[in-house]
Amino acid sequence: MKRLLLDSNPQTEELLRQRAVAVRQQLYGKRVYIRGLIEFTNYCKNDCYYCGIRRSNKKASRYRLSIEEILDCCKRGYALGFRTFVLQGGEDGYYTDERLCHIIGEIRSLYPDCAITLSIGEKSKESYQRYYEAGANRYLLRHETACEAHYEMLHPKEMSLSNRKRCLQDLKEIGYQVGCGFMVGSPYQTIEHILDDLSFIKEFKPHMVGIGPYLVHKDTPFCNEKSGDYRLTLKLLSIIRLMLPNVLLPATTALGTISPKGREEGILSGANVLMPNLSPVMVREKYSLYDNKICTGDEAAECVACMKRRMESSGYEVVVDRGDFRK
Ligand code: SAH
Image (cartoon, rainbow, N blue to C red):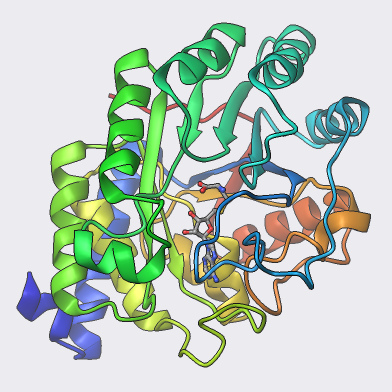
């Protein structure tokens, strides 16, 4: 595997890509699933060194969406063909379990045919259980790096890889479809770290894997670091598809940010999910994990039309479907 990662021969990349696409084709055909991403708060109690919405970033202009605003996003999203809503945010204490369960419950009863995905960080098993019972089905929690020492270089000492892993385990036990993942080219990352990430993923067998290039945010301690490598990210998408043939694998916004055709290339490397932004345009710029994030000025409808066009021109089809994990 190490040789494969270090081999920068374009022919190797092409071969990996072809194999990944063939494997994905058998299970999912040309279908690409879309998830409506609702970035409902950028308040965060954590202070991850790479992230633009970390609590120490005093320049971040903070916002929270009300339940009415969130439900309005779902309404517009449903009409546009979304059958999965992803509630993502910083770890914001304002959204107590009670408030979250109320929001999840409303979405569940209004949209019984939709999947609800949460991406709201580390919580207790009891909290995860409550959200599940309120109607949530899936949870995205990137492990960020599978190496303890590297984890400590990316996070302040009150955060730990062991707690992150505990969360992932709890989520799986409760019955969620679970996603882990990491940033490609995060500061201090070595090839050995990536090998550890791949081993972790292989062992954990998540239903979803979120990977994208690390991108610099100017108001973080890592403002002078380099962004991740585009081609390596594509190669890793292919490798992950081959490792876990039925995994749900998004071509992320970060991939689309680092290169104009990033998301198309991601799909052509083995990804099968896109996560267009459903957040109100007013708050898009504020949910800034990294600099120069794309699609901050477009209405959801424009994003979907644009995705459909992009996928069709690459020979793929955006479908109206929950896009559940297939065994
Ligand atoms: N707070 C939640 C979800 C929001 S962050 C959580 O902790 O899971 C979602 C993901 O964005 C993170 O897991 C991280 O991998 C990624 N991310 C954060 N900052 C980034 C950056 N500067 N470049 C690329 N990805 C970043």
